[in-house]
Amino acid sequence: MFFISSFFLISSLSFSIVILFLLKSRSSSSKPHKNLPPSPPRLPLIGNMHQLGSSPHRALHAMAQNYGQLMLLHLGTVQVLVASSADVAREIMKTHDLIFSNRPKINISDKLTYGSKDIAFSQYGEYWRQARSIAVLHILTNKRVQSYRQVRKDETSLLIEKIQETHESIVNLSELLISLTNNVTCRVALGRTYDGKKFKNLLERFLELLGSFSVGSYIPFLTWVDRLSGLERRVDDIGKEFDDFVEGVIEEHINNKLVDIKGQEDIVDILLEIQRDNTMGFHLERDEIKAIIMDVFAGGTDTTFTNLEWAIGELLRHPQAMKKLQQEVREIGQGRSMITEDDLEKMSYLKAILKETIRLHPPLPLLVPHESTQDVKLLGYDIAAGTRVIINAWAIGRDSSTWTEPNEFQPERFLNNPIDYKGFHFELIPFGAGRRGCPAIQFAMVINELVLANLVYKFDLTVAEEKDLDMSETINGLTIHKKCPILVTTTPCYK
Image 1 (tube, rainbow, N blue to C red):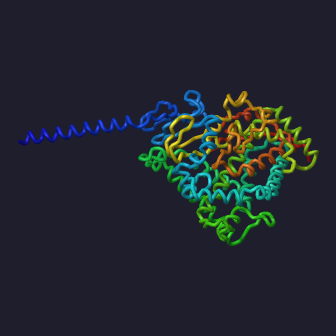
Image 2 (image 1 turned 60 degrees about the vertical axis):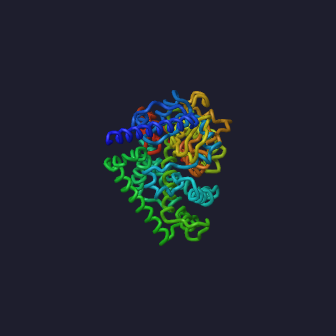
Image 3 (image 1 turned 90 degrees about the vertical axis):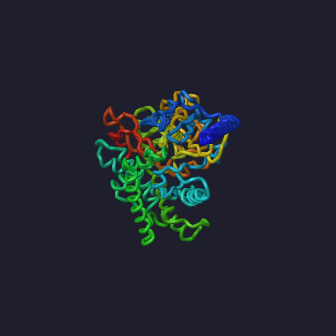
């Protein structure tokens, strides 16, 4: 009797398992077949992580040659869609902009930006709309950006004075440009400058960590690796150090309001006023103020300096372009002591040089990642909700189907060419586009234009040594920097 019962039980279980298997197979076969983008072979657990190397923008560009303008990678447990052409970027940031307007939650950026309460990394929703409206309506309006022109003039004059004081000896121009962009950002955001070397070091470490690779963000059950490597501790330490600094700045403003220029409010003043008067119709928390200030520093200093450094590097490598720019600037300057911001609109070749520089060397080559909020068809492929999206702006800027001789520095390609970097032409998107496009384009580019125009107006620049023509790159967090600093000798042109 026992054997009969056991046999019956085993038979019933086996029958049930077979039925369940058949039902599952039938259910799976009844589901519509997913048409996924091309995907390179992947390894267990890590997926395609090993293929990214030390220069992900270059590695992804090379992979796109084999797998196409839209490919699907697997980084640990995370599906990542990679766009490498203007057409795909247009589909993502224009046609389906709303669906792809979210940001993925990444462990490091989340910690450093007070739970992603800044503008760049906050998830799409009501808070992001409120934070962006503060930037667009109060911080980065055309009127507000123009109001800081005295700051830009002062710091550009100071740069020229420092170079003149060297009396034609070798000048580390990279160091001076970092100091200038730091000072402009500090005065505009905080009301005054701060200890240059100390602040520069803090900002460099912050930005480096912001773009660091976190194993736990891609393979959650290996989060302990970030702790073991010391990454979590370093993030906590730099987060506290930056928080202490910004907290001190806010308290300084509350207790003794600073005004850098007579009658001119800085960004901290504006944010505190919005908090105090509730002018936006919602309450702005202290941590939210700090997160927005961090955005200003990350976007206003590093990317601006990087663009200037690459532009000067390219001009030193291309003397004819340098000469042509100097002719334009000096014809308009007519021997006056400085180029003013009113002069800049007349300088078409200056603008072409900066466009060409940012095409070849976008400061954030992979932009800030997007994330899909729902299932969507993209160029005929099925993209699932929650898919992370990388837009390779570096690859798009070097796409041979768009650009003739894409790897060559040719500013003339932008003369009488409507393509611009403001997010309307997807062939050139160093600042992104759509809802999540950078709102600080004008603020950054006017500094670049003013400083570059005055440098070539006031000085003839010559590379100090042949090795300084090296244009190799290094990645610091999210941004690409020139690996070697620019060392030049300077010959004054106008007293």
